Structures are given as C-alpha cells and as structure tokens.
Image 1 (cartoon, rainbow, N blue to C red):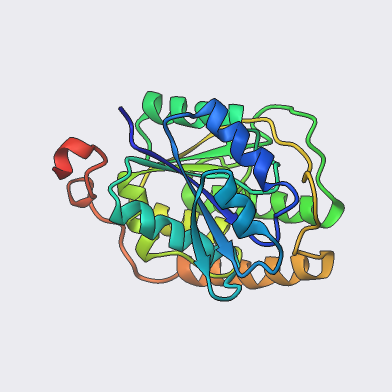
Image 2 (cartoon, one colour; image 1 turned 90 degrees about the vertical axis):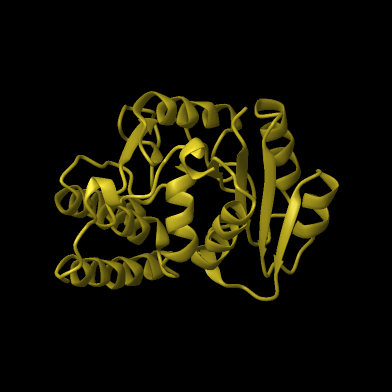
Length: 248
C-alpha cells in the first residue's frame, strides 16, 4: 500500500482545520496527516491534535516556504512514497486528492499540480491575484517548455524523488512558483490535473493586493535570474529513482 502523507501548512486556522482534517480522514483513511503550525497564535495546534493529526510546531512564523520544507523533510525522513500539500483553510476539497494520486500513477511524473484552469471550473480570483496567476503561468510555461496553467496552486502531490529534492531545495518567498523552476531544472517531471477548489472557509489571506504585486515582481526577477544561470539539468540516468523499490 502507498505510504501517503498529507501536509497542511497552517497559520491561525483554528476556526476551520477540524472539519478539513475530518474530511481528509474520511476520503483518505490510510494517509498520515501532518499539520505544520507556522507560529499560530490561536488554537490551531489544539484543534489539529484533537482531530488526530501529527503536528510540527514551528517556534515562529516562517511563511509557507519554511512550513512546507518542514513537511517535506518529515516526509523524507520517514520514507513516504507520496506527500500531498493541502491548504488548511478548506480551499482544497479532500475528495480531489485522489485525482492527484490517480494522475501520478497514470503518468509516472514526479509532481502533480491540482489546477483550477486546465478546464473551466467556475473559479474566480481577485483582480490582482488573477493577474499574478496568468503572468506566472505564461512565464513558467515558456521556461519549462510545457503548458502550465496554475503555477501558484498550493494543491500538489510529490513522489519520493520530488520529496527528497524539495526537502533540501525550497524557496521562502512565493515557493509554489520557484519550486517548479527548481524541479524542472533538476530534471523532474511535472504535470497538471484539473481539480475543483473552494473559497477560503474562514479567516483571511495573508497576501494583500499590494503584497501580491510586490511578490510578483520579486519572484519574477528571481525566476529569470535562475533561468539565466549555467546550471545544467541532470541526464535521465543521473536523476534519483522515482520507485520505492529502487531505493530499498
């Protein structure tokens, strides 16, 4: 049986994390759940523990990058076959996790992104966020030489090889975008699968419109600088094995 870890980075998500975890347990009863508490000042930790999740309690707020790298390091250290990133605010329905797992098994890729835009799903982003989504989708499609529609999606599944890479290489700012560039340049395979997403169930986003513009400019610069560097993706035979059996 697939050894599956669901990682939920959480910052002040005490209002909604219980039902989110309960639904994941219902949909993926064999998965382990790891809540990475990113310096919350509410009852996120208590709620997660009461729901039966494992908790990595960070001493202060590191941001989504630091939280997710913590999750990937845990997944690597404990030998998980697949790690799925899920928002703790209820935006990623638990019944969609299986779509990511099915696509990974079907295609054999290293990372599957749950996309809101491969097919029409009725999802509507704010003006500033929508501009950022489209900008990075076009930029990374060009740099990765494949069509990518939702590069800012935080709903993803990584196999054992991608877990190992992300445990050691994960950006702090706007990591969804930069992690894709990092994986592509290292020779890992990426694809998207259409998924349904919901509005945030409680609380407010930490990214304001002004901050979105700042991040877009900052990350675009970092991505372009990285793309112009001399790093060479490894040959196929140099890539880490993606099968658990080969790592035994």
